[in-house]
Structures are given as C-alpha cells and as structure tokens.
Image (cartoon, rainbow, N blue to C red):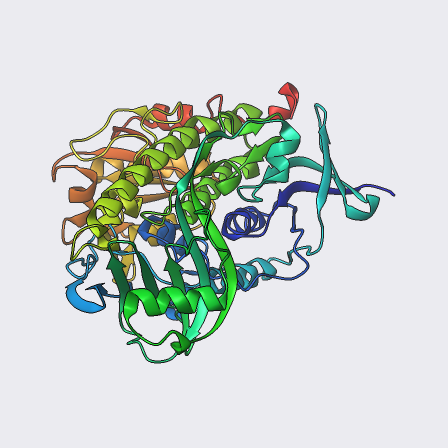
Length: 522
C-alpha cells in the first residue's frame, strides 16, 4: 500500500503523546498520533498533574478546564484495626506564591485529563488514529517508515514513542530497559463503585498485614480509586484482582461490609518497577514518558515526568522541522531529560521506602510520599549546553523561569510573566531602563521568534514590577540592569548584562538555533 507522509508520528495517545501532539500542532507542525487501542480507555490510573505539569497545561491552554474537572487533593484519614486514628493534609498549609501559581497537585482521573487534551488537539484539526498498531519501524538518513496493522505504511521525518512501559517503539529500536522489578512489593488496583464512605476524604486503612486505600474519583458520583495489598493463595502468589477479592480485602482491613463495593473495573496488579533506557534518541526516533522510564508510584511522578518530557521535546522538534534550528538541537532532549529521569527514579524509590516504613506504624500514611521535590518546580537543566551566561543569587541559566505578577504599563491591567511566556516563542525580559534599547533591537532582529518585555524599563510599554516580585524571583536588585532570555519551554536560556545584545544574538543565532540548517542536512 502507498505510504502516507507526515512530519512527526507519535505512537501512543496517553497524556505524554497528547501533550507532545498539542505542542507540535500549535506550532503548525504536521503531526499524526496513533494508538493501538480500539477505543479510548476509561482508565483513571494516574491521579493527576503536579504543579509543574499544571504550568505546562496552562501554557497549552487547558489548565482552567483541568482545575474545573478535578479537585484539590483531599485530606488523608488513617485508620488502624478499623479505627480512625489520625488525619493529615500534606497540602493544607500551601498557598500560591508570586513565583509559583500552583501550590499543590490536582486530582483528576487520567481519562478526564485525556479527554481535555484530545479536545484541545482537535481544535488544531488533529485526531487520534485508534485501532492503529505499529508493527514495524525502519529509518534512513531522511525519514522514518512505520508499518501499521493491515500493511499500511506511514512515512515521517521523525517519530516519537509515547507508548508506555511495554513500548513497541523501544523494542523495535533494540534498546534495553535496565533496572529491576520488585516481586515482593505488589499492589492490586482498580476503579470501584461504593456508597457510604465520606467522599471528602482519602481513606487509608493499614494493619500489620496489609491495607486498603480508597480515594474518590473527581467527576463521578460514587467512583473511587481502590488500592490494596493483594490476597495470596496457598503458594504465596498474589490472587488476581476481582470484585470478590476487593470485597474481601475491604472487609478485612476496614471492618466494614465488603458489599459496600458494588462494581470493580480496570483491574490490575502493580509491581514496583525501577527501569529506564540509556538513550532517548536513536536517529530520527525518540522515546518519552513510560516508554523511556518507569518509577515507583510514590510521589505520583510517572505521568508528570512524561508530560514534562513532551514539553521539552516539542519546541525542539518544531524548530528543527520548520528549518529554524540545526538538527543538533535535538540532541539536547536526551542531554536534559535523561538526568531528570534518573533523578526521578532515585526520588520515587526513596519516597516509596519512606512510605512503607511510615505505614508500618499507627498514624502513617501516603502523606509520607509528599515532599516539595515531587512538585517538579525545582527541575532544571543547569548542565545543559543550552544553558549559557551567568546567573543571579536566585537563578541560573537552565532553571525554570519563575512567574511574577506585574502590571501592563500601556493598559494598567495586571499581567503575569507566565502570560508573557505563553506560546511557542522565546521571551526576552529586560530588567531596568538600561535594557530598553537592547529589547527593541532584539525584537526587530528576531521578529517571529522572540517577544521582548521591559520590566521597569521605562517608556509607555512593557511591564511594571510594582510589588518587586519579578526582581525578587529573578534575584535582580532594584538598580541592576539584566537581560534574561526564556526558552519556549519556560526555562532560562541566558542571563546577561543590560547592554549585552551580542550574547542574545549569539544564543538565538548560535549552532543549536541556526537558520539555514538545510545546508547541513535535516
């Protein structure tokens, strides 16, 4: 059959694949996204985005819908021998900060998040090709050829495997998935229907020999996430999950009637996996999300790390595909994200150990998995070849660019820095009056790629930092003049002095971002 062309083929339509597809589509990149499933899964699985992923979703234009469809994380109630002994709210003291508008993760069923992302993707004219399984993958210097079920071929300039822990793309690339599976730490999971328990609480019953956790699924009347240590048979092997086994586990650990559970779906047995690839890229094919790394569930970082993989890769693929950057830019995806995956694996493993120790004692619970590190706001790329220039006492190149409330000088209306960043462009911030000329010249020289904003730079336009929040977040004194170049994924690329337009030009016209890449092959 004749091959169909596309610029980027995405295999897998979970949150990682959908995030990447939206990011490419909004940059006018021709994208095709396929999934072998015959219909969209009604799986709640991951419990929702963390604060950094919410920032990504805000940039993609869907954060308000996600917040509306979900709920804030609930207080956790811990029981022992069926009796309530402690409440904990690990997020109760949190408040949005000027530099970080999202102070906590958000609960939303994965199917709900995926519906929102698919709707956003459809606004760009792109829909998921269901029932389309990848059965073969080859590549040459100029393209990737995907063989699909039924013998159809699809030719793309690039392909990305976002197809989960059992990734067909990873297998076809011949990459190893090094790590371990802990057969001793097993959990049974599912979505259940239940009447009776308070839906304003995340219930956690723990005993000496196991436990049951029940968390209400937002957007449902009686749906719950059910997690428990499994029953075992005479040989000590886990009993496959079922409504009947869930009822027995529920009655055993809660001392409540098991028939309060009326339905159980999406049944699965979870084993702790700690695995990752040693390469994110093979030629024109990339991996993202669980296809590249799987972690213990403690801290809820699996889906979030995948969303943030996609956010890092999207702008780079788009710039190379559109001729605005050298292909070398794509090497920085692995350079930046592989260390994040390794760090995340270490963090989640440590949080799992802490949680398992906590629940052995009365009053312990899943709040032990939560630390500020699980919010994702501290993840940066200071080691990256895309992090150049100096820094301040608060910020260095490669760091996540902070938010701050400002005022639009021309209109007098409030405007956050994140609003200035929103979109597929680079952003140049100029702090202080000495930056006005550089901002004007940079905007003219890089029209279409760059938006420039003065912060207390004088004149009738730009932003006023009335509360001093922007200067505080960026570590810039009231009398200093500083230029800060922010990448399209809202990480700092460059920090330099007020008049150093040459450094800005060198960054945007440098080897990684050079136009005219076709002369070098693309």
